[in-house]
Structures are given as C-alpha cells and as structure tokens.
Image (cartoon, rainbow, N blue to C red; front, side, top):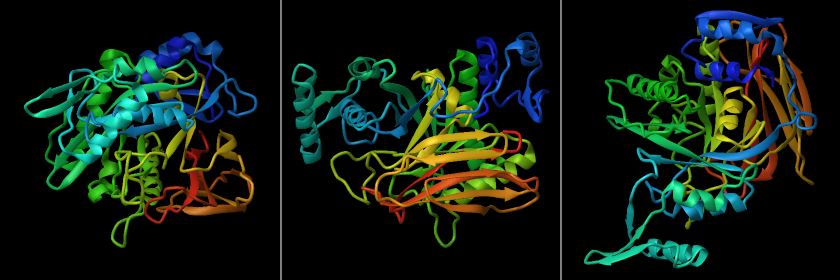
Length: 435
C-alpha cells in the first residue's frame, strides 16, 4: 500500500479528519498523489513535511504483520446463542488475532442476566460454559423464575484472552435501526460509548445519522473508530442509490456469512460485489473516498451448523498493520491495507499507484484463478480487465481505466458455505492511478 511516514501528530490529525475535512485543502505530496485535508492539517503537514515518505507494502520486507479478524459477531448480549467467552475461545483457537463483538444496540459494560428456563440449547450452552471455565467463573441465580446466568462484561473476560501481539478484542456495536420493514444495520468498531438507534424519514437519513453519530463520537473522544454498512441485501433494505447518497461511508460487507443476507442478490436485485463497483464509480465521480469491502461472519449460532445457520469461520479480513492494537487496525483499514477472504490467503499483496501485485499462499492440489476487475474512465459498469490461471499476477491500470481490484477464486470447497458461494475466494481493495 502507499503509506506515509508522517510524524505521530500528522497521522492522528489525518485519521481524525478522514472524511469531514477532505474537501477543504488539497496538498500535493508527490507525483500525482493528492490528499484533501483541512487548513489546520495543511499547516501541520508543512511542519512535518521533511518526514514524509512512501513505501510499497509487502509481506516479506516491511515491519508490519498480517492479522486475521472478524468484525461482526453476536453473543447472548444480544441475539447470539452462546456466552462471549465461549465465542472468543473459538476464534482464538482457530487462528484469529482480533474479534469485534458487535451486539445490537448494546455494549457489554453493565449487568445482564440470561434466563435458562427449559430451553435445551441454553442448557447445552451452559454445560459447555461450565465445563470450559469452571463453576467458580459462572455466576448463577435461582429464583421463582428459574435459573439465570450473569453475563460477564467485556472488561471482566478480556484479560482471559488478550495478549499483546497475539489476540485483541475490539469493543463494537451494531447500530440497529428500522424503517417500515427495512432493517438498517451498521457496525461501529472501536467505539467508546453506546450509540442509540437513529430515527429518520428515509433509509438514507437514518443511515447518515448513524454515520454522523460515529464521526461525532470520534471527534469528541479523539479515539479512532470506523463505521461500516452491514449486509445491504438483508431484506433488500439498502439500495444502490441509497449507498451512493451516503457521505462518510468508507466500508461495507461484500461478504456476510448470515444465510439470509443475499450476498449474490437475485433476479431482481444486484449482488453486493456488483454494488461495490457501481458505488465506487459514483463515489469517484463525486470526489468521495473509495468504498472498501469487508468479509464478516455475522455469527449468531454456535451449536447448530449448516447453510441455514449463521456460523463462525465463513468470512474475515486480513489486515496488514504495524501492531495489534485497535488504533493500528483502524489505521490500516482506513488506508485500505487489508483484504477480505472466505478461505484464500495471500503470501504477498502489493499495491501502489495503479498497480496490484498478488501471490497466493497456495495449498497443495488447489487451483486458483485471479481476476482483475475494474471500470474504464467514463464507464458506468465494471468489467474483467485480465484473468490469470495460477497463484500470482500483476496488473497496472492503463490511462483509460479508472480503478482495478483483484478477486481470487479457488476450486477448494468451503467447509461451511452459504448461498451458492461454495468455493473459497478473496477480494483485494480497489486502487486508482493515484492510490
């Protein structure tokens, strides 16, 4: 990725003003690369100009690391069917380095109890919970309404799992709104305080208020945080036109592992991947930052497995960051220094101005097919610019091409697929001539 070795003050200022001040002042840093910043940021930039440099991200030569993470997860704190400690234990033991528990309109910072009753699934979950963490860890209460279990807060269970450089839990919330029969969900990652559901007269108004609320909290707390649009095709609630109308929305889920979200669309609705390209065509014309795509689990079900259940391990992001901290993960995501995957892993991913270089960490006996997908200048749709059968490929934008991204397909069966997405794949973020 194109990266900048700004002084700490410069990095923080740019991160805080990622969108709101983007159209105030244009700084030409080098070559054709320009960054839109506020006048205040421009002044800081002039002070720190001497330390500006660029580099090309590679797995082999840089000082960063790849971190695997899931940014969309549910537990008993909202509508998941297991205890958060059991869920964290699963992700940690399956090679993830960070997880965001993103509950609906709640954060795990207060007292909350779960009633067991006669629910056989809750009984199984409780037995597993006691077996894994012991009776001394479990706080229960028996009264006239039956047995109840006190849920642990994030701060209570975080020390069991977190280890510097190895595993991180990021506080998050799924801001869950509704208009008519349309569910409108956005995830706020690394927020400090709960954000209440927003009200409005339209899909765009409600989504925009959620985005603005996260941006406001970021400004007020000086804490890096991002917001992303969840599963736009869930109940087909968010249209292409709705997404194009948004301001400050830089992330969305191109893949969500819930069985009811229609990643591939249907005969009357486009899929999320086509939507991604069309939004970026519009965003670039409007001078907005490009939309980046995430892969997530949206996991709810931890005891029943199969296509009809929302299980763990279906989709994730691989983030290339300097360290495993919320701040570094957010910074890398905002820089586009990540890819989304349902199973394919890269051994090398380099992106610089207009060029993508990619190498797959190939598994024995698995065939890989790389597609370089983008849009031409003045075009209104995306197309496949080039295809490569194999584990490596490079593509450089031509003058008549607007942006390009890579999609890697494989013939390896996903162990627990949804929809018709049976084979493992991965998506890089798009690049333009200047990024």
